[in-house]
Image 1 (cartoon, rainbow, N blue to C red):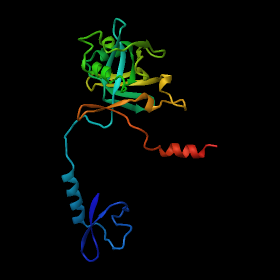
Image 2 (cartoon, one colour):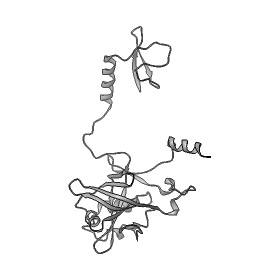
Image 3 (cartoon, rainbow, N blue to C red):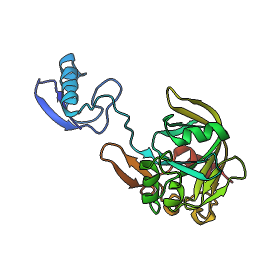
Image 4 (cartoon, helix red, strand yellow):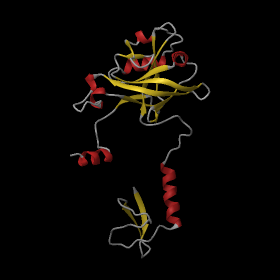
Length: 239
């Protein structure tokens, strides 16, 4: 980021801002810099305003998860729905936006349970299919997507065999007006094929995907770029 600083001789010069203290003073360098004047602040705000594009009120986040909700229909057949608007809302709670018109909403209200599987790169086409085809119009869309189901041991909902990681939930609440579904997490399961040497899910093996709502693209998560500081501290403190 380029910022304009004014030195003691009133000469304007530009520097690449690498470090800046809380008082707006350049901490290093041969030239002596003053605090940012009101004019400088207005100039910075102006620069910020003209370099930012406003899109208005949009349901956009990046990255955005691709969640596949599994439920049972009234006849006991499995159903799946693609939902992008959701995430962990409390330690043992997940919240997802599910329109009341969806077959999934009817199913989870009847069974009081659902599963949430992580969409993967390998099954991207099938995951997209269950998002564009309605269970109200195509009762057999689960099978047509190429999915197979195994009943959860913990809740009255199906696990999708082709998606190796899932969150199993009991219904906590659902508001048809706001479309907010809240589930209490009962269990998280993962196939051994996606586990690493430490016994935890290896994202490189799972290959979960995210959704880009701006460009309507699915993206696969990339590699590790760093570690959480707390995990490094914990590792260094371990005997």
